[in-house]
Image 1 (cartoon, helix red, strand yellow):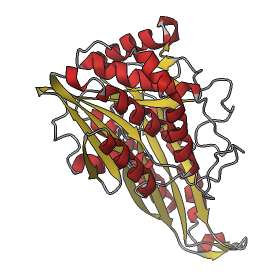
Image 2 (spheres, one colour):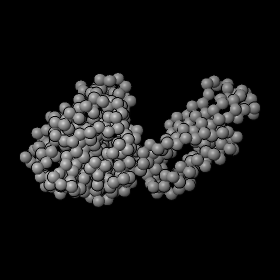
Image 3 (spheres, helix red, strand yellow):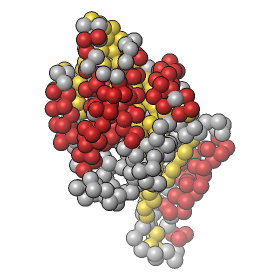
Image 4 (cartoon, one colour):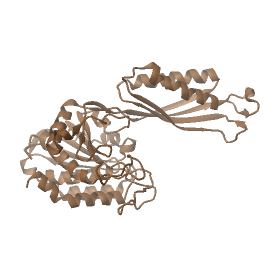
Length: 390
C-alpha cells in the first residue's frame, strides 16, 4: 500500500487515540493509563517492549542484522492546567490538561510504529526504537537515559517532532544548531533583620535589597554579554512580608535563567556575582540555589538536512521554514542530543480548527489535520535514515 494511503487508512484510529489520551491527561511520572495503552499497542505489533523511568515505554523494531539504530521520541505528560476549550473530548480530570500537544505526539508515534512494522520484512539491518517519554516538562529524558534508553540497541541518532500551533498546518520548522534554550531554575533567599516599618534604620530591609537585585540582574543581558547571545532571566515569584507595617526577616525570589547559546556557565557566574555584591551592599545574607531544568537543544546539521529532505516530500519546499524555530523555551530532548546526533523539528498545527491561544494556555487547541503530517514525517524520516524506500 502506498504510504499516504496507509496513513489515510489509519486516520480515524490516529484521531481516536489522540482524543482518548487528551480526555485522560496525566502529569509527569504519573502517566500510568497512557503508559498501559502504549504497552498494549506496541505488544500487539510484536515489538520488543520494556518500561523505563517508572512510566516510560520503549518499543524496538529490529532488522535481521546489526546496522544503524535510530530512536524516535514522543513525550507523554500533561500539565496542571484547568481546561477551558469546551471540546467534546475535553479533560475529564479537573486541573489537568494536555495543553502542549503531547497527546498528539503519542498518537502519531504509535501509528507511525504500526506503519513502520509493515516494513519489517525489508529491514535487513539496523533498528528503530520508539521511545515514549514521561515528564518532559521536568527532566524525564535524563531518567530514561539513566536506565539504559540509549544502550539496547546502542542508539546512533535520535529524532523528535513537536506539534506547534504558532506555525500553520502544512509547515515544517527546522534549523541546525541551537534551537531551544537551556534553562536553569533559581531560588534566592535574602535574609535581613526584621523591624518596625516606621523605623527602617533599625532593621535590614530584604525587600529593598530584592528590588535592587532584580534591577541589577538586567545588566547581564544588556551590558555584560553580546546581544548575539540570546539570554532571558525572569523573576517569576517574589514573596516577602505579611504586614504593611513590618519589615520582614527575609525575601524569597524564584525564576529562571535561559540561554540560547553555549556560554550558560558564564551567565550563571555573572548572576551569582551580582547577587552577592548587591546583598553585601545591603548587609543582607543571600542563599542562592540553582538547579538544571534542561540543557541547550542543539540540532545536528546532518539530521536537519535529512528532515528537510523528508519535509520537502511531505509538505513541499514552500512548506519548510526556519522562522520561529529558535526560541527561549526549554526541551529536555536536549539530554539525548548531548549524547547522540539528534534533531528536534516542529510540525505546524495552527490550522483552521486550532485555537488562537498559545501552548500551555487553558484554551489551547491543535488542528488535528497536523497529526497525519506528523505520522508521515516519522515514517519517512525513519525509512530515509535506514535507506529504505517508502
